[in-house]
Length: 193
Image (cartoon, rainbow, N blue to C red; front, side, top):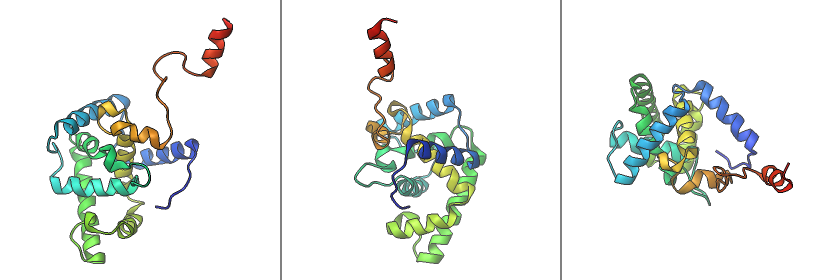
């Protein structure tokens, strides 16, 4: 997972491809509900509602390689695992089963290839190698989709803790919810047209 400079257009295009091959597709109300529950769980220090602790550790390690910590915070710092836990617990037994099966297969592959029991025990380069081998699977596409959704959701809903996702893509939400919405609105208001 080499570091590349992404334009907003390239980023959004890659997210669109992820959504089409994910086992889970979320509508905006579903995203908001999952984010809200994830935020409450994270803030109260709750245990996971859907995932076993061992599975949560593994999925968080995968998410941390999808959006790694570099000189900027990544998925781990954004708390996306709480978002993922809530999405999977929202009457998505089939998707949960698919993801847990994919996780078991990844762990078996890791054990055969690297001789360790868990993905999170691998060095980052080994984790990347293991993920490259499965990057064309529904399992990986779904985890990638959930990681991105949790990373860039509104912070008050679960992921994107302290706006780390917004900072990563240099999105400034300072004036997004009140007028003027952009320079053209300010210019329009100033000229009184």
